[in-house]
Image (cartoon, rainbow, N blue to C red; front, side, top):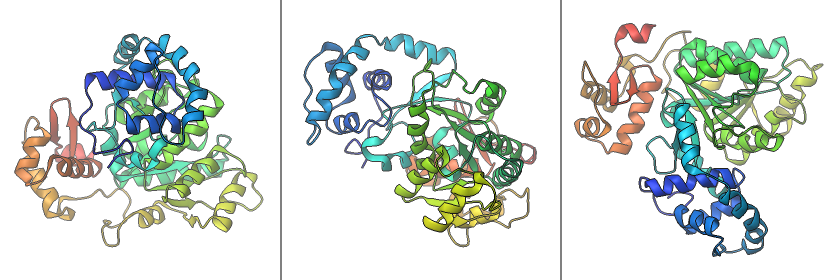
Length: 390
């Protein structure tokens, strides 16, 4: 089941255009629109907004819907979806919707606050990147201690095949992304603006590197500039995309504490790095440890132990990737099904491995995280041993 009702079929072109338009009309995570999309097709909602026609309010949402309709209708009339999609294509961005192979199903736990659509830019597959991932967040005005801990933590996590998810901001976020990139695994930056805007400006080069080796993702259409509220709303995605969140440094009232609250609300593992008792930047972490049952972590090994089923992690030597001898029988069958040269589609690999396409896609994502395969424009390919060592 999904947040919009029964299991989602691959979205149609009409549904895609409608959801693209809705991403420009409603605030991200608006529960009223989420409730509407649970009961009515996106194309029907979009057509009604464009025409100024009435909409059937979901149960309990009549007053809230009425308060939004005038604003949504005005925005819908001024939204050129074709132009929006053209701009996205010019910047190499794509629209990812519920039901798409790239959609991360863990976002469905957000229920009515689930994204209506995601704008994605980057060489990596978002769903597969987040199959084995951890969120690392913290203060923008980070200390030298916080930056050092974050860089080392993220680098080792990446060396062990874990994707690091963060918010692309200055400070801890930037150190998390840079450490992951240096470790050789995809990193995901969840932005509070369009994926073509590149905010903050000082991170333009970092965003270019993430585009080449990871994923930029946003609920906002191309060209959207950030607002203060947008940063808070996007924090729920950072928490929802991964099974656990690490807070490295955070003041008592901060965006990182907001992300931590979302992680706890969603039942994700919440972790915090202790700091000097004299540092205001660690006061939030100490509060999480004292009052919110966060797990104290001081290394990548601590993080991995919290997020991994017992007995599934490889030895903890730095730089060791998951070798083929550590793969289970299913993963080995899928790896053997991939050709030595060229690539193969999911359906072909699934048939060879005796799995459903969805199950095959999940296993391919884990193989990608371990460095054995990668997704191409025409399917999946096996990486050579030289590529895995590089």
